[in-house]
Image 1 (cartoon, rainbow, N blue to C red):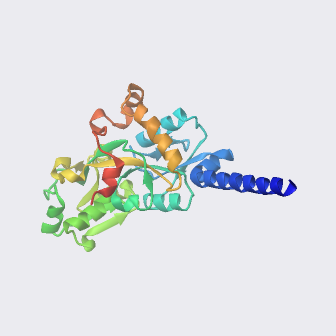
Image 2: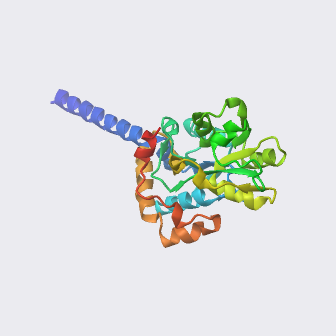
Length: 282
């Protein structure tokens, strides 16, 4: 009898241990941090109006606004902003220095290999920032090639890969930390055009009378790309819960009122685009 009890006890212990181990494996690093009472660390670069730090260090920008609102709906209010360089966002989440990336990243196949994305929070296109009057008539990457011009873009932006794919030589592409440095390069004449997304191009144009943005429709139609919120690949369960709440919040009156100040309008709302499709696109 004692032998039977011992065997049963060991068997139950093995099953319980395996169940706990499996649950832990499924939980992911973010769930572990929440269980320990630690804050959710939002990683973002200074890229208004997408994401930036307020004067008090708080997380501002419409991607942060959307993310924080969805997290609150999930019951999470302990949030810690983590400002970093754009190029350091994906390495930070891989190394678990941040838990969520809210910088306004386009969902691209190369990024999907290293970071998991939420469903799209919006769909956006690109544009150039050029000297006022656009004296060189820049509107496409082909113009950069034909006139042997120099373009500048923040490191890690999709516009760098897009330019190379279009045939722009690497020697004609300047990389800088962010949009502020991009504007400085164009204003100083070190670059003929700054390539960025249309929202940031509009903001840069509003910042300086010395520059203007080009027509976003001059860019290829496939340059309109979904943007998502990034998660660690092991945080599947949390990301799925986030997506469920995001679906309820996205496009709501509450959301649109909140993000209006950052120039996010209904025209940017997803129209059937999915993360799965975006991750498969070339």
